Length: 248
Image 1 (spheres, rainbow, N blue to C red):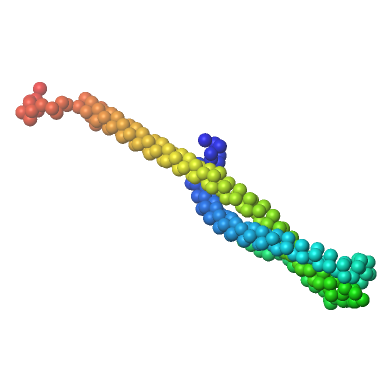
Image 2 (image 1 turned 180 degrees about the vertical axis):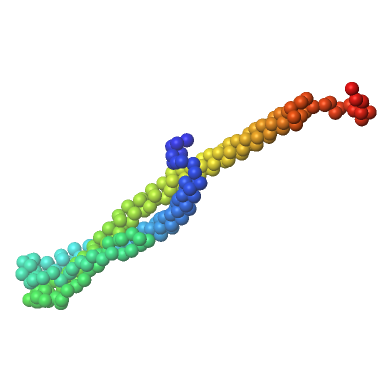
């Protein structure tokens, strides 16, 4: 029984504390259940977006690889020319946070800094159009990669948050609430038992007082019938009125 309830002293104060804790556990269970439902809805939405993004990613990467092949065919090997033209990164990833039912979810966004710079002159001699198309195709691929990374990170974060929330919900539902309810039942039973013991004790005390009073009254009556005021034996008054007038 001690494993199913908290070991406490059965008093009225402890009973009030346990009732307050039970109310808090019930409210906490309801709030955590709503939180788990909200996280599950968002989790499913992100999962659907991940599937769509991966499908788009496959198509975009194929187009990017084909655009690179076309650019190499039209402009030749232009890798070193691109490396020489790049001064600063034009694509940057900004990390932000999104709040879903109290859970902080990381969110990545792609930002473009500045213009094309010297990249606009890459392949100007020959195959420039194919090089620019290849650049745009890979920019689109990078955008999808950043979006996919954001979704995957949010997916893992939500998955861990949902597991933690479900564990707390199950703990409140299967461990905390039953223990509090069993503890309250135990305290009520002990208080009722104490009340019955007190009532039984009071009845015993009253019965003893009545018995002692009856004995004292009997003793007083016995003393009053056997002695007179001056200490002489009392006359027998149980006879008839005529007999009491006879003088010896």
